[in-house]
Image (tube, rainbow, N blue to C red):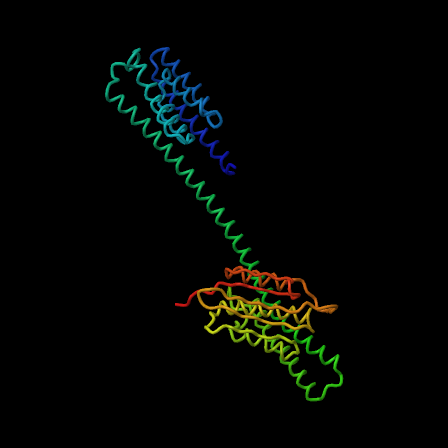
Amino acid sequence: MEELGAPVRRTWQDVVLLALVLAEVVLSTVVATSGWDLMRAGLTVLLGAALLLRHRHWPWLLPLVLALNAVAWSLVILIIVPFAYATRSSRRARTLLVGLLAVAANIVPVLTVGGPGFEIVGITGVVVTVLIVAASASLGMYVSTRRMLLAQLKKRAEQAESGQAVAQEQARRAERTRIAREMHDIVAHKISLVALQAGALEVNPNLEREQVQQSAGLIRQTASTALSELREVLGVLRGDGEEAPLAPQPTWEDVRRLVTTSQEAGITVDLFDFIDDPVPDQLARTAFRVVQEGLTNIHKHALHTKARVALIGEPGTDLVIEVSNVLPKGFTTDLPGARMGLSGIETRVTHAGGTIASGPTDDGRFEVRAVIPWPMTT
């Protein structure tokens, strides 16, 4: 796409070109001593007018004008044409050939045929002509190179600006996804515990006062923890910092505490913990989310079944996390589920370089199994 100012520049270039040609023609006419001089002046006018078409037909028009200049001997044509060709041609070899054509058109006819100026044309004339053509073509190549460089810089700037906008949009989407995933992890697990504890009170109206108080305390504590964590997540949305921590990040002890909390809420879940080495915080956070989501799904869909959580691994191998439960028969729940949690932990595990699978097993259980690389600590 041409720049908006290109037609204006071309108009001024054409005006300057015609002015130079007319000035040379007037000077030639004034000092003319024969009809030959007047004929050359007229040919110069025609060649100058032909140059007005150089913008579209330059590949063949400019060399033709140079060839005809062997008769006109116009200094303006000798300067303008090599410059105009060099600014348009991307092939330096062709520009060199056009320059040689310009030199030959002004020197060879004088040396071979003779004519006005034959006596004074010699080494000096050849050198001057070569210098004029070389300077004109060099200036044209410089202008052409500068134009291409500016065009490339402009294109790169546009691409960089576009890429920056895309990167910013991707960063915003990733941050929104991260916040949404964190909110889901908090809300789904904590609220499922609240619903579970409240359901136990509902179906057991004859509980002793101490048991009711204990269950109510668990509900209050769970809800209070959920609200506190949600406030911290929502605080990130109001803050100015990027990639700020969303909430106090869980440790390996919190993974074990998840099972204890579910047991206190009335879920029959066993913990098989075969981890003896310290677990890195990043690996512990991923494991926490996997166990949390597995237990949340058990709270929702397998309340009255037996469940187990198995943790196996050591540094230099893999951390294997298995959360499974016996497939329930006829149990239904009114708690919503959109598989957002499973999708979220799949993203986390994949990002950590691991794999995850979920679904029924041959022994009649539903299992969530994640295998995550456990690097050696230095």
